Amino acid sequence: MGLLLAGCASDGSKDSRYDDGLGDQGSAGPSVSAAPGPEPTAFEGRPVAGLTRFLGEPALVRREGENAFLRYDLENCRVFAVVVPAGGTVTSLSTGPLSHGAMPLSFSACTAGR
Image (cartoon, rainbow, N blue to C red):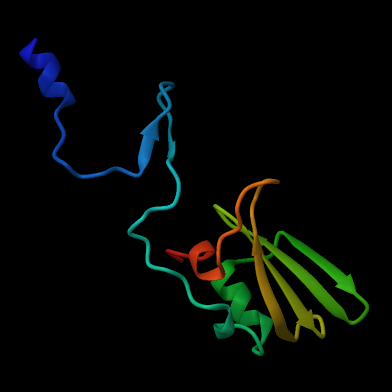
């Protein structure tokens, strides 16, 4: 019995991963200790290239006349950018959930740990 209990002992540290019982481990969600990301003002009014360097290539690019709407799919949320003209300046940023009905995160929470 002592061996069984020893296997359950914890050193008190928290692991942000879980075992799904199938031998695979997945993420239990965003780490509480992840540093918050920047505020959207760090990218608004600046070239979209900086946002793309920070977030990676957009999952969706939609042209609206000479302007563009970009969607970046991150681990826990989506970031939406309006770029005027396309390839030019970020005019607005917003975030949304990955699934319908989930609560959206702020931009700095959505980009935490990047």
